[in-house]
Amino acid sequence: SAPFSLLTYQDVKQHVEQIVDVTSSRFMPPWLPKQGHGEFAHERRLNDEQLEQIRRWVEAGAPEGDLADLPEPPQWAEGWQLGEPDLVVTMPEPYLLQAEGVDVFRNFVLPVPISKTHYVKAVEFRPGNPRVVHHLTMQVDPTPTSQRLDEKDAEPGYPGMLYSRNVRVPDGQLLGWTPGKLPHPAGDEMAWRIQPGTDLVLQLHMLPGGKPEPVQVSVGFFF
Image (tube, rainbow, N blue to C red; front, side, top):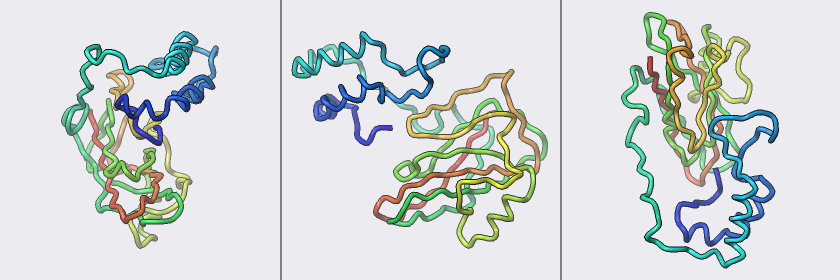
């Protein structure tokens, strides 16, 4: 995500020269796959014609244009984007992020209250406090190992960027949240298993924002 908003013309006008620089160098919009090595869904790379259009627009003084041509602003659904989940798992208590200091990487262990195996078609994350949560990833632990690490720390969770040796990705799924990322159902043929006795292990990257901030993540499951 950008360090500033680009939702309005006034927002964009303040950064037009920077926009030309970062788009022409293909630093923005962010897209990691190298060009010429396959096609990907939802590709965000700008083509040469689009880059030239941006450059000419800025050279012309970045005119606002006819306001009557503006599309309707997007509307975002309130609450869960995929509808009401079949199961919601929430951190048992908030973690209080300190006001100052360096970035915090911390792992939180969430028991999954199920009595039989379920097949997960989609997962949706509520970061709890997007002002300070930079991103999160989710893996699973079918053993008590992560719980024991959590119990050794006086605060919720335990620190570090490394998981315990028993933590793994769930059936090959790379699951996580970043600002602006929308949840996508995997479909019936791509569902993954979650079994009784499994713990979720959420690794959060948090950024102190000048005042103490509570963080309490929820995960919605769709079976």
